[in-house]
Length: 89
Image 1 (cartoon, helix red, strand yellow):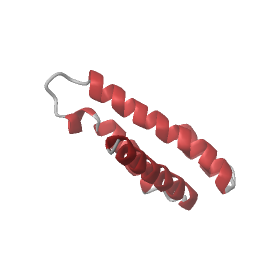
Image 2 (tube, rainbow, N blue to C red; image 1 turned 60 degrees about the vertical axis):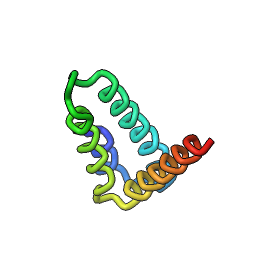
Image 3 (cartoon, rainbow, N blue to C red; image 1 turned 135 degrees about the vertical axis):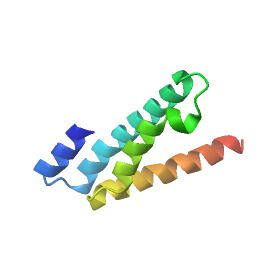
Image 4 (cartoon, rainbow, N blue to C red; image 1 turned 180 degrees about the vertical axis):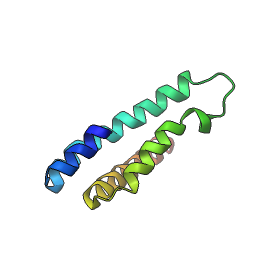
């Protein structure tokens, strides 16, 4: 995540480039959450296990870069729709 913030601080990136960076980062964070939830502390509440992921996602959604927020929110909506479509089949 620190690399992402350094890139955003040093470069004036267009929206498409930000999307090309942020979307894979968010996918990686979601994968990290899945790993933590599957291999987390035995007996620990799921919220405790994925707390590091929640912190990363909060940092993205409240980023001071508008394009990062937009990209993240778009992906979040896509994930919600995807989950709804899968569960309704």
